[in-house]
Amino acid sequence: MASNIPIIGLNTPPPLNDVDPLDLALAPPDDETPEQRDAREKLEREAIQRSRRIDAELKAAKAMMKRYKSAIKILVLGQSLSGEYCF
Picture 1 (cartoon, helix red, strand yellow):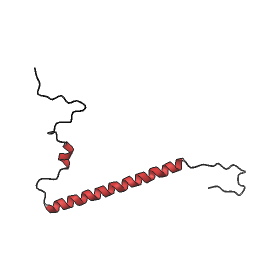
Picture 2 (cartoon, helix red, strand yellow; picture 1 turned 120 degrees about the horizontal axis):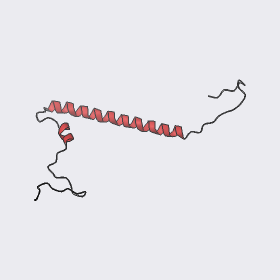
Picture 3 (tube, one colour; picture 1 turned 60 degrees about the vertical axis):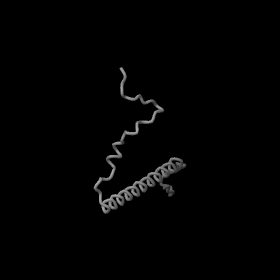
């Protein structure tokens, strides 16, 4: 008995009629006005800029932590209250 379900292997691309549900969710409405489109695109650009700033802050924080971990720590031993202060 033959089946109409195609067998998809590892090297076989998915069928062209497959639609990504995320693409459908993110697609603009069909009845979008030009003003609504401009507002939506402006919000999207701001979100991208915000995301890039956060990414840059995380990258900088990661670099700082890396430098902190490689810092040399020195323990100074001596007589207490001898007038020397280490900060």
